Length: 73
Image (cartoon, rainbow, N blue to C red; front, side, top):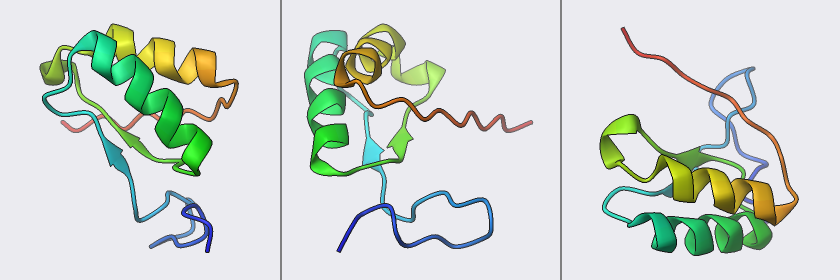
């Protein structure tokens, strides 16, 4: 089973995501990179988590790039 195969709607956002809440920037970098290599294609992050830099570095160094940004009003 691939983690990216199951979606709720036509946008194709995977149901199972990797959360970055309470990770430091250093932890986020390593964990996000490893999560992407493990098959996750949905990374849950938010400005309030204060780990955007680490999350971004993890995505960049993974070599896997698919970004969808959701903004809630």
